[in-house]
Length: 419
Image 1: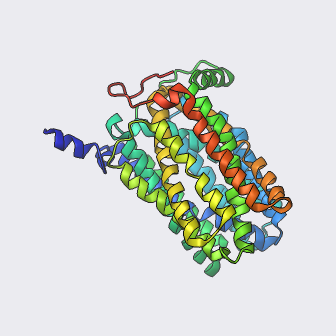
Image 2 (image 1 turned 90 degrees about the horizontal axis):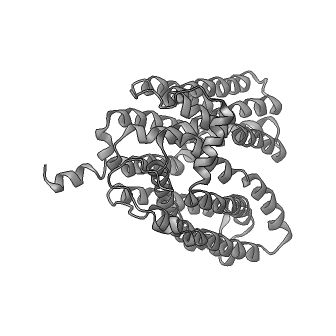
Image 3 (image 1 turned 90 degrees about the vertical axis):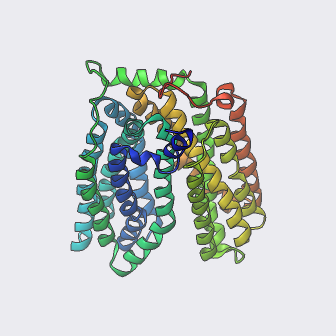
């Protein structure tokens, strides 16, 4: 085989050569497409019962808090048991919880407390799925195809980010949120037998230890890597800013600023998704040799749309800035997955990933509350410009950590243990 042939097979759709990845990719694509309707369907289901933002906040908080509480245990279980089986089992729980919500809506017996309880169950289930998936992907493909595998999964995610809400909006508006949930549950029903076709060796974890012992081992793996905890600490701040400044202040400004408007905000969010989408295509073909260095520089680009939103939120200008930020975010997303999957031992990867998820997400509810107060009590431009400066400074500050700046890609061992 010539070097050119090898290059072609390790780029683009090279990961599709791996049988296990093909089946996982199909199952994941189905659940991403049908699951993209979830947030819109749930929101309008709650508002149909009680048209009060506090009711919706209660349901969303129930999901988020449950996810945070259980994510560490999800990591331990995913390192102990077959990861594909864990995902299948959680899909069964999701089918039952979402199916129950749909049945309550169809029969007119749904209440906000009942939906909050079911959202809590769904949040706990997700806390087991995400670490299992993070640990599963390196088992599905070869080290040469790992970047392409992550980029392909990101491609599907970005596609549904762009088109999913539109389809969900039409379905919810015409048929009602209950039918959107039926479609979502059907996707999980289809994914379960497909995941059964993924054939992997049993987990390396031999058992015989307690869950808390396994959590301590995961914590030692997490804390022993300066690049890992430095970036997670940075994202505690960055995610709080993102969810507050972009998720709360953005829609608020759009609704109250004629220069942007609600429809203009939709174009801006879509432009961000297009940036992600195009970058995934690039990363299918071009190797990311310094995943964390380029990734954190890419994340710093999010300061651009934050600043534009505060200074002059014109649709075209803000959409261009969001496009750039989306492309930068995808460089980080793929680079981070590569860093985790290539440098953490596979038998501990789910536990370490759960610490990453906990640290990155735990302050997001606080960010939402803080910005909800700031945007109504302070000058919006000042808040957003300051947020952009802090965001970029925190992202770029991680580059002074030598292991973040220097980290490259392993050439021989697929799971090089880099400290």
